[in-house]
Amino acid sequence: MARTVVVVGAQWGDEGKGKVVDLLAHNALAVVRFQGGHNAGHTLVVNGKKTILHLIPSGILRESTLSVIGHGVVVSPHALMSECRVLEKSQISVQERLRISMECPLVLSCHVAMDTAREQCHGAGKIGTTLRGIGPAYEDKVARRSIRLADVFDTSRCEQKVDELYDFHNFVLTRYYRAKPEDPEEVKDQLANFAQFSQPIACDTVELLHQLRARDGTIICEGAQGAMLDVDMGSYPYVTSSNTVAGGVTTGTGLGPNCIDHVVGVVKAYTTRVGEGPFPTELSDAQGDALARSGDEFGATTGRPRRCGWLDAVALKHAIRINGISSMFLTKFDVLDGFDKIKVCVDYDERHCNRAIVQSHDAEYLSQVRPVYEVFEGWNSSTKDARSLSDLPKNARNYVGSLEKILEIPISSVSTGAERKSIVSIDNGVYS
Image (cartoon, helix red, strand yellow):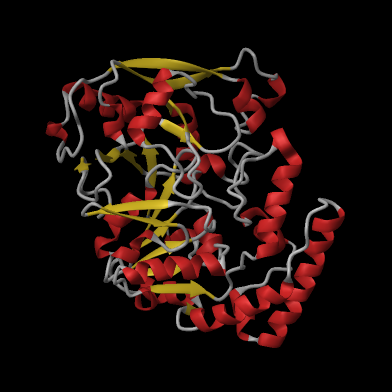
């Protein structure tokens, strides 16, 4: 029976999950995306070559590993086809390695238009979405009016559903937002092309995954975004539109809760956030700028600069609880090289909080707390491309050990560079 390992972000996304999944996928049966859409951005660096994936699982670079897009993902036909073409130019046989659920809802031009119009209308109160149409696509799923991949293989049914969907969205766009309507005829042509493109890779992924479970090996479920962006347990309303936590695996793939054997939390050695919303440890000073420069903190999907701050262990403990995380993978450790002092938030000062909201983790609570820091000595030597724990400076080793005590969970590996090989493995038995 195959083991199932879930990889989730333990912060606000951009933690480096793509690298972790790529490393774990070297002998995996499959890597599965279970939520989100092309608002995700997973960056892989292999032999100096950078690959940025948005929809396709990070296991696609592994020849013997199947990449599966589960029904919990909302799929942009245009984005998926574009991503496949880029990979095929690199001699990656996408049709052999990729499978996509027939039940995936599709992200169409009307969703992008709604996303854009809504953000413009909100002005300063905007959420800070990627403007990719992800939220409106999930809204249509819940409202039971989505066009799903299975629909595109029945031309008459698909065209009827497109007309109905665009009637609804164009009414809201023109009457409420005073925006231009979207053309349904253009979408019909695009979906006809997408039907031809996706026919070889579309399947019942629930059945496929349970067939794979009957074999020996590992199935990796790859999360997008991070725990603090979960629609239910994140910094609401500044969240994404899906369940980013490990529980989303069951609803987004059809693998039951008892199928999950191990949950890996991925966390940067500091904290970043893209878009709007509270950020208790944010550094709006020279130190924040230094983290951004050293960490090359620009979104892989939008190119937006990421907000940077010290590691927030309070938020991490929340993420550990709600995901059932059993070990942590620490990334971008080398970015801390050269800092004289390194801070970790170990508590929140709630004296300025509205008492009615204490113990929540929504936006109102997080905007009112103040971080309480523990300060650690930095290290003045480079950790970049270290391969073993003994390669790290003493203060760097002390920092890793202190984090394990604070979080009360083992740190299994430390990433010390963007390359696949830049990894310090602390516990080789965690994933076995």
